[in-house]
Structures are given as structure tokens and as C-alpha cells.
Image (cartoon, rainbow, N blue to C red; front, side):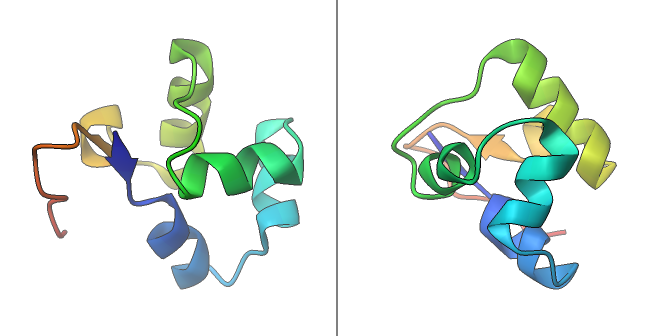
Length: 70
């Protein structure tokens, strides 16, 4: 699965630590999410969607589907 987290985080000028604080996770978790080494649990995916005010399907994409641009 790939995602738009890095792009959305950078657009807000947040560091990985800033996003981690907002989500209640470690900076390492944010890094793993952004690099695709970790897929979020459903509760975490909902938190991420709320933080970015985006639907989950606008943030996460299967590996065989290109990321949609807003």
C-alpha cells in the first residue's frame, strides 16, 4: 500500500515529530508509514484521515493503483 502522508505533511510544514504528536504515535511510526514499511490499523487510519481532513480512500492506495491527486 502507498499513501500521500509525506506530501500532505510537507504541505502543512509539519515535521514527522509534529504529525506523530497529533496522532499519538512515535516519529518512527510516521516514518514507517510514509515509506510504506507499515500499514496503519483501521483506528490509526481514521485518526490520520481526521488530522488531514481527508477521506481514508484519499490517503491510502493499493500498490497496483496510482495515488490520486487532489
